[in-house]
Length: 465
Image (tube, rainbow, N blue to C red):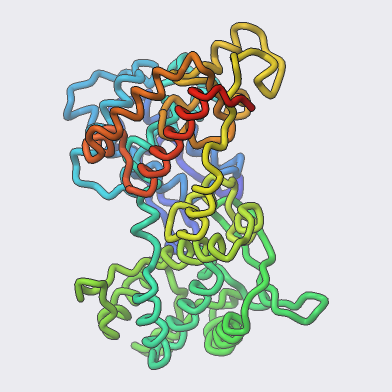
């Protein structure tokens, strides 16, 4: 979206209609009427426009965040919380909202999106020093862990038996465009929006003559070139061929335009995400693709992305290499794949044992940088210390179950009683421990237990690094 297009918006209106062509359609309707007062409406509009002007966040992401904020204000109204501005919003309110989301029967990914929307608006206001925003931090960094969003990756990974059914179904699928898009997604892990935004000429060759695909991501306004398989090359060539008539009629380069087989004269349109998802559901039903319970499998296009990322991890590719291929902005998203269907790496990780450090005492010498006494206190944890708290933007991990399996973790003999108590609580009632600590898998629990055992043993034997 250009600054000129933004200038055409009537900023005083509480309902905007924006002409914006994307895989979501040609127009976007933005409603500010749900906001409780004049301050919220004016501020949200200013931040909405500022984010678009800066261009750091893609338009559809801001649009999604704006809509998801409705649930937060429903929560505020239902609980009778009086917010004149966000300056009245506190850490306690944030924790209450997380509890509210968990009571609504929402999926983990939906709850994660709702939290992201709230953090987006509050943190933007704080970072750019808007009036009416909290002066203190209201998020502690554990919001996503509280709703166990990362464990949702397990449900997004497509099991081998389902992938086999999909491959068999593609052999007889008659909708050529649908088949080609699925094949591209399976072999490249592209986001659905990225596939629908592919243009004529996007496929080139490297100096060895191997196919390379040019991908543009509106999610983070980046582009990348990725090597692709021959199957993807055939799928791209197929889209080039079947979309040619529609591209000429619409004067566009998008490969996912098609002839709508109804009405005269001929009508053409561009495939949008909603239409594709409908086709994907019918694809599952038509080919009777089922889960282990013989029920129709809930196939999501994004599942191909998570599946490919996991397989790359299993094949020994590095996180940075995978992040570059998939277009991740940070390694945080990529590292999530390590936890899914990764028995080989899990076994190798267990061989490493405790990956942190055990020292006689925590001081500046045991940390990775020079700090004053105040910062040294910031690095303190209940069972040790973090060697690099500054590198984490000051957000110290205070959860036992993450710190002890982190290379930045340091502990001392003084913390031996804490580790013993931790281990005893875990072993006393594992199921209760998993619930209370938001642990979703026994693999994670077993890793924590084995690590604690090694820490206790080394501390008792005074084995220092």
